[in-house]
Length: 163
Figure 1 (cartoon, rainbow, N blue to C red):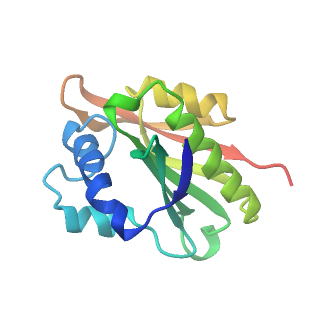
Figure 2: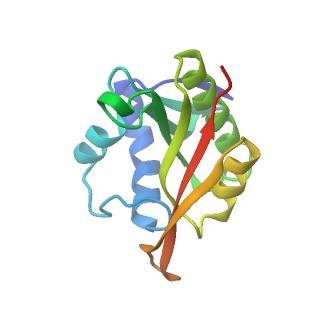
């Protein structure tokens, strides 16, 4: 699998993955009626951030975006988000994207990485992040409206980097 920077030419292949994930309403707080243009504006990070795609056998199977978690005095902590197409889940795509994002942030001197809204029902992602050094530092009860489970908590997760 190759992980490389998102090119505009990738969007027609990436948009169905993004649409699939946001319309499922199981992991992201994005509007499920978001258009392709709106989604591109939200997902395609400009500098100092970066958006990448994971390509396997010539097909885009996942994506990540990363950058500073906050502006100004909070810009020393990074953040990242990940999406993997349903057909490629549990095949190491998310792991590869997470490792890429962590390396990217460490190489740029960030103090750590913070995830602001991980649905507690997304147990596969929570376990993946914990395997890579993240801890749940807090949970906002009932902050995510899951389509099948009702209101579930949103975890705030953090991984500090050793300098």
